[in-house]
Image 1 (cartoon, rainbow, N blue to C red):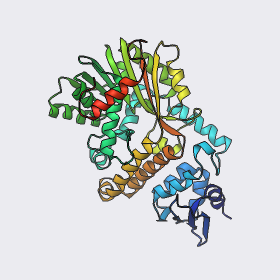
Image 2: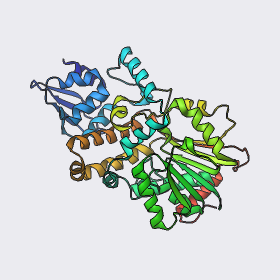
Image 3: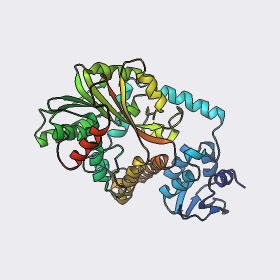
Image 4: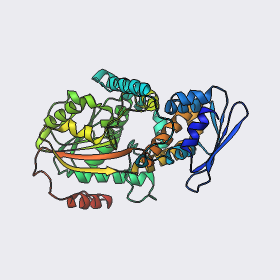
Length: 413
C-alpha cells in the first residue's frame, strides 16, 4: 500500500474516499456515512502523492492549486470536511504527524515571521488586503465585513449576520454621545461608519492598507460624515491622544506574540481613565502553536492566531480590567461557508481577474479555514477591557438590551 494510502486510511474512517493513482491503481477508503459526502480524487503524476506526504498541509494545497490533485467527485470543501471531520480537535488528531525536525523548523520559522516590525507589517497587510476590490465584492457582504459574522440564527443571511455582529460589538462598547472612538485595523470602514451612525460618536479608523483607506474615505465622503468619521494610513503604534473607546476587529491576528505586551500598553495609554476597549480576534483553543505553512506562505504572512493564555500574558501587569470574555465557536464556520459559496458562484469572474490557480488557492483557503472552526481548534474571542472597575455596569444585561435596541434599528441606550 502506498504511503499516501496509509495516511488516508488512518484519517478516513467515516465517509468514503476513492483515490485514483497516477499508475492506474485505485484505493477505496472508509465507509459510507450520511455526515460526509463521498469524494473521489485523482493524482495526475506519480510524484504528487509523496509530495503531499512530505508536508501534508502545504503539499495538499499546492498539489490542488497546480492540478496535480484533481477532485472528480465532490469539491475541495467536501474533501477537507471529510479529512478534518474524522479527527476533530476535541478527540485528538489521527493521521501522519509531522516529524520532530519539521515541527522544530516550523516553530523557528513562524517565530521569526511573527517578529512583526512596523515596516514588515505594512507589507504583510498589503499582501492580502490590497488585492483587487472586485475580488472582495464578489464574496463579502455589501458592507465588506471581512471577519467572523454573528449568527443569532443559523438560517440568517450573511448580510444579517454581519449586521448582527456590528450590533453585538457596539452594545458591548456602551458608547455614549460625544465619545471619541478609535478603530484599529478599520478595514473598509464599515464598523467605524456603523458606530457613528448608531451612537453619534466621532470615530478615527486606522489601517495599513492603502486600498482599504481609499474605499473607507470615499464611503465617509459619500455618507456626508467625513468630518466625524476619519481614516488614516498609520500604524497604531504611532498614534497619540486619548479615546473613550477602542475597537479592533480582525487585526490582533497580525500583531504577533512578541508584541502583545506593547499592543496592550499602547492601547492602555490611548484610553481615557474610564475608557473601554474590545478586541475581536481569531484564537486557538489549547496551548500556543504555529501558523500552518499554507496560510503563512499564501494568505497571511506574519499572521498568528493566539491561544487565550498568550493574550492574557500580553495584558498581565498593565492594570487593565478584563471585563468580559466571550468565545464564539461555530460562527466563523458559518461565515466561511457563505464566503465559499459566493466564491464558487463567482468562479468565472475570479479566474478572469487572476487565473485558475488563484481561484483554487482561494477556495482551498476558505474551505480549510471553515473546517478549522467546524472541526479544528480555532474559535473567535471577543475580549473587553477597561481601565476602571466602575466604567461599565457590573452585569451583562446592558449588552443584551443594547444589542436588542440596535437590532430593532434604534440607537443603543
